[in-house]
Every structure is written in structure tokens, then in C-alpha cells.
Image 1: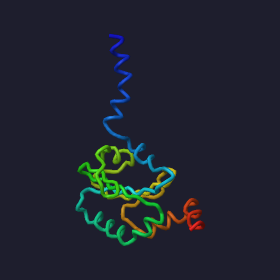
Image 2: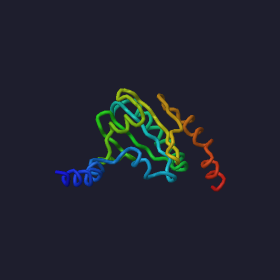
Image 3: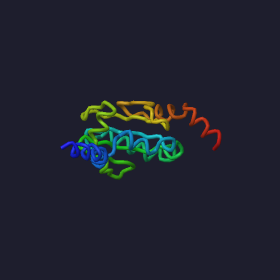
Image 4: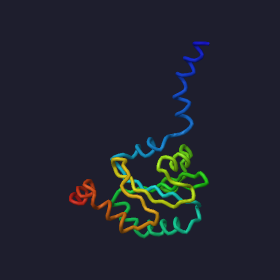
Amino acid sequence: MRYLWIVYFMFLPMTLQATGQSVTQALGEFAWEKRQIIVFTPAADDSRLTRFKTIQTEFAEDFAERFLQTWIIEADGKVLLEGKQDSRLQADSFYQHFNVQKDEFRVVLIGYDQGEKLRQAVFNIDELLGEIDQMSMRQQEMRSQ
């Protein structure tokens, strides 16, 4: 019996890892490479999400210049990274990690250092870009461009 417990605890971490990637791990893959916008939406057809996507398209050059990538977390469980579903991740993990309710619309900006920089209930592109442009890393990027 004792050996069974040893084997169990040896394989437990692998089992947990196989069930899905954590939010911290997923975001950490892009640390120091990408700034990340996480959009929480109650539904894929929510008018606030549609507005966000329209603005994102209109400001595509600004998003690219600032190395932004977008996650969309839908209350029905979908996790999309740059428009593609990521089945390794669970929406519930994002909702818990960022303390967002499923009936809320939220836009969260994550910096290169993986720290939360901005949280909005109503998406404001000017505030978002202004916040990024004040960051020291962004200041360095602008000087080198």
C-alpha cells in the first residue's frame, strides 16, 4: 500500500498538468514579449465585445506597435487567443484568477512583467493606449523606433 501512495504522488503533478494549463503559465509564455489584453464577456454576441472588436480593427496598427495580443474569455467557457480557441485553458480559471463575474464585461491590461496595469468596465481605447504609452518599457520602444 505504501508503494501505491509513492507512485500516486509521483504521477499526480503530471496528471494535474495534463488537465490544463494554468492562467499564470499561459500568460507567462508571453512575458517580456507581449502586452496582453484580456476581455471578459458574458456572451460572444455581447454588444460591448462587438464594439471592442471594431475598435481593435480600427486601431490594429496601434495594437501591433505596442505588441498587444488579445484574449477573449467567454462565460460559456471558450478561451480565445487572437481569435483562435485554446482548449488547453478553462475560462473558469481566468474568471477566478482575475476575480471577474461571468455576467460582467471587463477589459484587463497585463504588462510585459505580467502585472495588471488597467481594468475597465467600459472599454476606452484612449485610456488604454495612454496607460501603455506611460510605461517605461514603452518609452524605450518609442525612442528606439
